[in-house]
Image (spheres, rainbow, N blue to C red):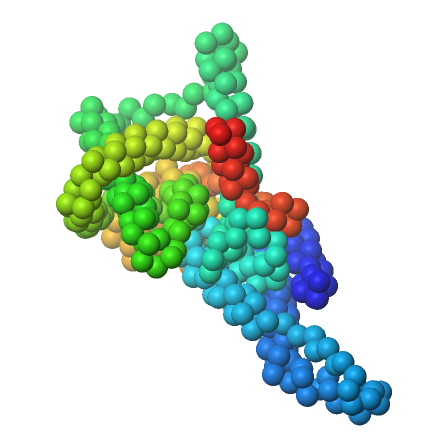
Length: 414
């Protein structure tokens, strides 16, 4: 209860104020992040010090201040060091995950820092129904992304149905289709298709390798180390969905395929030597599951990409381009055609948007090349609001949505 009293008011204050500023101004101010960090660390340091001085201070209060008899009970109220350790470890892992997601362009720097603060301030008891050792805030991460995915899936399904309806029955009144790029030759299209198929195949092999590790090594790890890694499988699924965008870029690198093939060779060699029959069964089930998973994930991403491309783009004049704006993919591709200039003056663009230097470089490039008169940007998405919604869901359910969903499926299958 003491952590509820000390932390939850700050969670709601920071959640409300940052959500308002994200809607109003499209960014998170560092002062609220700093406020949450200072308060969270101050509370942890206080209880850490109090743990070592609680007993003498309590005895002094009982027997010297209020003069209780010497044989009177003197209860000492403190916080377990193990709990403080778990809070610090959880926050540290949230820092690593937040940094990686920012580094791989999964979210903006402000969003990553806000996730770290929520992980620090949210008491661990609110994860107990789907508690993940070392990093319980992964449940919070799931509760942030799943509502967003569901929202986008519903909106994109509705929009795509509407698109198909007008294409089939009212083509003269409304045509939502984009103009085809006639500059692409048949050779270019075949090359793009081949690259897509190859990347998907590498991802599929990578996912198969990951789940084969769980299937083949789960029992030996449980027997020798008394650790049941099967509980981590749900979070691996969620991680593959959340990080599917950044992971796709990793799988495109040539070295990745070599590593995956090496890992698969080692895993399958071990499996066929130790237990050939069960290895064949695990391999068959894993391949079947991963093909279904990859198919659903690909359709899901294509549907959302379609929705984003049709509804989240805004065309502006080049002189209206400002910092913190996010360029559309087609605009980025146009800029990247001038590779030397792009690498030298623009470089890496993070999810928080363009810097002032990048905006100036793009405007100078346009004036020199006379390429773009207008430019496409993505409309702002209030991600901070969805993060706060994820916090509220975690407080109410004390679990992750994915854990409850899969748990319900398993119950129905019994």
